[in-house]
Image 1 (tube, one colour):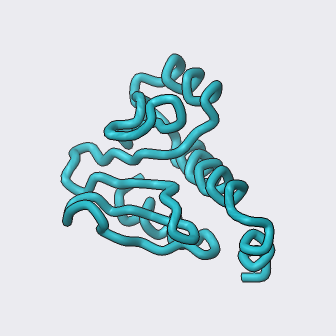
Image 2 (spheres, one colour):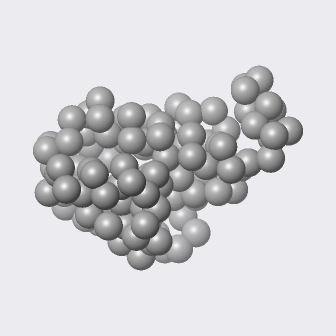
Length: 118
């Protein structure tokens, strides 16, 4: 998966916005102002930080060499995924959805209902 495919997939999720709040090389995807993915545009191969259940995060790090503790993030709740082909496109898409869902679940109930109508 390349950066453009990853970007398009993230933007396909309801309520997603993209921003550059930190610098011009860190693309950030947010749901209602809360970050669910960060993509390093200057990394080769590309890297993406994704929120993850802590137990699942550890499991993925043990299973894949391309999954590392989240760079500049809470290492308990975030993973950095090196997009080098070790992780399939389908798995990466699922991990993006999981990150999105974790953020969505943290939103107020009213906001979650608004998102479901999109």
